[in-house]
Length: 250
Image 1: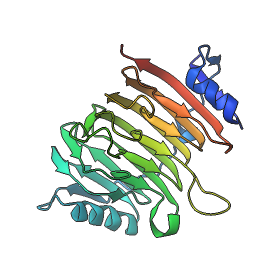
Image 2: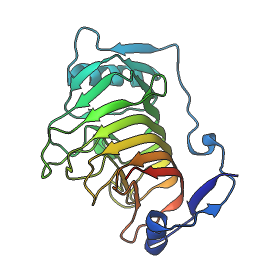
Image 3: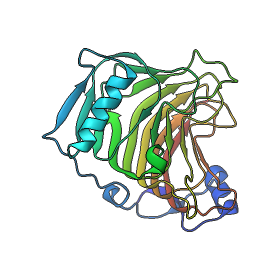
């Protein structure tokens, strides 16, 4: 039996319990496909870079794969300084563990569910080619500057895994989940966030913050003294959030 913390239709005070509670509830963990059940078009594959390592080239590959029924995009070893990239439906990105992503200050390097008036993005993933962690290196940024690795909006059926974030106490967390659009608001649902590590995160932001989300699994999160998982909602509803095996390194 796995140890997990489960929130079902929780409001703020229960969300706070997830961040700071000491006694997880004994529950049988649902199968992973309860949270993330992808359809991957393995017959449609591309590799980055293909003679051009710019942001526009990477975005064009993602857009082309999505518009042609989805597929797999492999990012080969290298250091890439990118502007903002938007994930698209059906695109599953596999990153070589020797990849390093860098950026200048911005709200997020990668986003899902923000373009085209917050159009829904589903059935996507961003993970390592072999389970070993690749790197987001934000260590050159100043503590007053803004950056996230991922910002999640109107998105569902996704997986984020297998990376290390090298921070410098910058503003914002490495991954955020929040409500977007008008009424009713749209927000992340059905996803797995796992096998992540962060160094020198701002203590007020940490690894991941979730203002609103539904049916999410957080597993194998690690870091220093930072908060690894914030679940808070300022009055919004958080539905069924599971957390497994978080680890602080003091």
